[in-house]
Image (cartoon, rainbow, N blue to C red):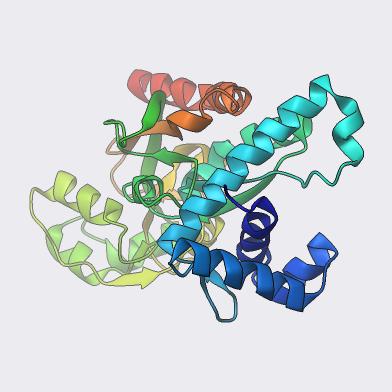
Length: 304
């Protein structure tokens, strides 16, 4: 039978990043935490924690942490029926979720806020490109993810959310300096673009769509949704921004579209581990409610 005090120690170490912080959270000594983890690793015959600053989970450790999240949700549900358990040392539930930065910056946070207010759960959000967040589910590192993958990850349930529209924008001065004769493959190859990181192919996808070619882009790497908007406003480069974040800037003339009407839409989906689907029904409802803005944005783009 699993030693749950040791399993909770592993989860606390991964959540806090160190043995010492986990010991403070669990109100035990660091040596007691170390002993619990060592005994559990020896019993399971595998390493659960990569010791470092911070400590991180191995794949086996990730799966164990997800199990502890399931247990925490079950205990939380049980306390609603047996409130006397509230003083029995039940730990707060921390949910590990993956999402793309643009969803967090544009529409996803209200869903987390609503669910946290209803349950008291905490969140540990992993940020990755929407084309790669599904990998976090496959690896057992998260229980749910906002992803561009429509096909269910094995063991997961999928809910379509809508389409997040993007517009290629830059400052008027940037347009005058870099695109005096319009957006051409030659100009795109010279004008600095913005990318979130090396996984971000959205700007290249847009350039191929408007030119029919694959110009090699010169790029600033800027891993921040708000940073993208600010960089476009300041003239650092051009980039694809969520339409809902730049609409007011476009209306005020602070930004302009590189090619009016030539936007890009990214379909988004909510994938949840099948084992967590029932206890996370409230979160799924909150995500669906927050995602209504995506459907409204998509209808607006279709009608423009």
